[in-house]
Image (cartoon, rainbow, N blue to C red; front, side):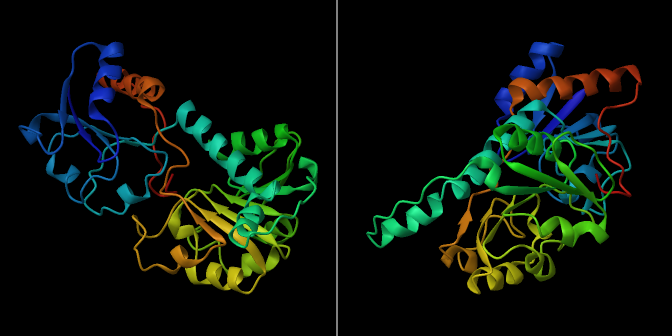
Length: 308
């Protein structure tokens, strides 16, 4: 079985090492050195060039290195073979860490102290209990649910919203578009972890921001196209929103002339909230390679009609 590795951010040496620990020696090829394209059975990828996968005539499966697969689905030439998204504990752990840090930044007023420092102002703000901060999580799936549970366990008052009904102990759950405004009305901090689909694109918009309490914060760790950029800028500039922390963007890297860079109340991180670590995620990939060799159903196959 020949595996083609395609990623400009992941370490192919580490991935090969971890896979061979589990499977033995592999025919592991790193793009663009692919050899005979007809020999490639599996593509292990993050944002491959459009049309590349269609050039592999005997491809049997596409294994994504990330939980998000919308860029793959945007490739209209994508071969009609099983497409599997990444589901791994390393993604959960790193996302939990990032969201908790982001929520704590606002809960403990670190953004306000940063602004005070720029003005040489010494002013103490007494800390509040975690329960005084209401955190809403949009998306209660493989990443959203453990994030909501971690926030709950830390002591925050947590509510969640999803397209279909969910139940999480200690989390007030809302479902469906009709409940979105009621959900948002009780959020001091809004965390977006939705999958990107035609139904969720642009969901972080002026209407949703207006439903949030004045002084709320938006944290987007979902996808850049969930957010209507101009609506966020207006909501922040007007003072309705206290600020935002954004890890994902419509165009990445974020262009140097984008107005987000010049808004002190908008914090930017370069798509680092969750990361797939080969030390653990290689087992997910190895299991799918075993299943493919044995002719068994693969894990975490994407429903292309739903988009996740």
